[in-house]
Length: 177
Image 1 (cartoon, one colour):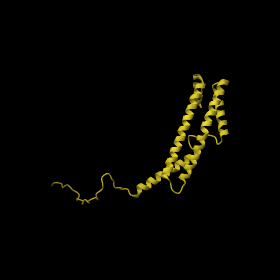
Image 2 (cartoon, one colour):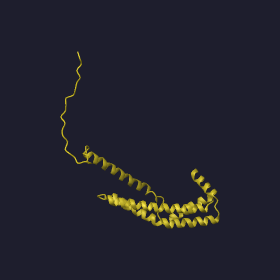
Image 3 (cartoon, one colour):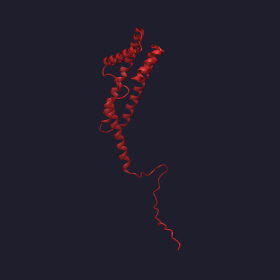
Image 4 (cartoon, one colour):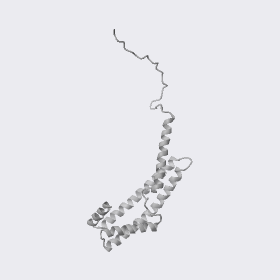
């Protein structure tokens, strides 16, 4: 006897409604929106956690007052200059550069903290305004860029005050820490 091959019964093909070109039918229904909402909630929660635990990023380690920040910079500069046995003339030049840098950064630090407070308020509002969030993000990125330019310029000036040997010694000391 010959074995018979089993063929499944034909299922009727239902016609699908016509769609305009370029559109897709959502097969997942509300699950897609629930997942998107959970992802956005997670991102918002992480942003708030980061803000609360690290107090931002770029200006995170700035002291709360200009005098405290100046004291931190002077202490840091003194320790760095002691490491490389800097001359009194170099110390004076470094002091002037750090004071100028601090004067440039103070308004940026204050503006960044205000933008952070606005971001926290916007995320805690009854309804999230995406345009406001984008405006705050853009503002904070401009502040970070301006701060980065100031720091880079100051590092270049500080590098010109120290000799190549002093810079290498300082970098070796920092890498060891």
